[in-house]
Structure formats: structure tokens, C-alpha cells
Length: 135
Image 1 (tube, rainbow, N blue to C red):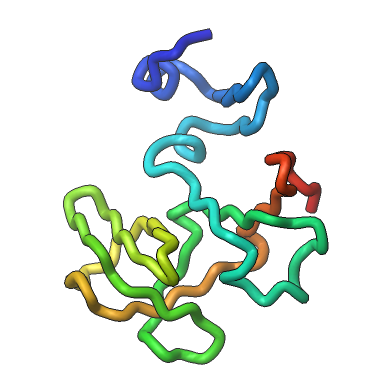
Image 2: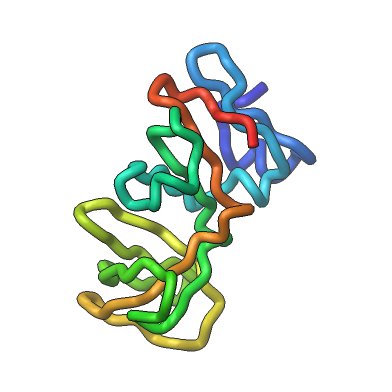
């Protein structure tokens, strides 16, 4: 057990994340590293496509798919920041920040609109008490 994230991600094959003495996430270091998973409010989504007791929807930054804005069935987000060295694109909608990792050769500028899709197979659902809803 360690609190040193560098040590954990360098030496471990699997990592468990503890919160209040409970394992809340477990997986390979690449899947649990930085940037952290996006925790999004239910209001950003079509609620008919999610469990009734879900209050938060989570998606890993690497699972977000970028599109041209105003493409059918995408969320239009406003770019806040783009870091090509870290491959991070930080966007927002209605005050909610959403982080995506991208290997695209495009350049993004603050204020620009980007379309994103969140593949249903990549979404994780959580109750208001923080417990994950099994898929």
C-alpha cells in the first residue's frame, strides 16, 4: 500500500483506489492515471437512456470521441484550454468541465465549439451516495 501515485503507477500491475475505507475503483495503472475520470451531472444526458437512480455519469477522458460541432447526436462543448504536449482538451457545457485526451493533429483555441460523443459502452453510472450502479 502507498500514497505515492508515481510509485504505484510505476510498480503495480493493478491499482485499487480507496475512499473512506472502501475500494471505489480498481484497474491497470493506465486506466486509473491522470487525468482523472469525468464526473458529469445527469442533466447533461437524455435521462431515458440511463438507470433511473443514476445521479452522476462518469467517462474516462480517453473514451470521449471528438466530432465537428453541430453533428447529429453530439454534445456541443466550448473549449476552455488545449495542451498539445499533454494531449488534453478541456471543454465545458453549462458550467461543467469535461476533459478529453486526444492524439489529433488539430489545434483547438479557447472559445471554439467542439462536438463530442460519449459512447454508451464507456459510461459508468453512480447513485447519489457515490456507489456505482452495475451495468
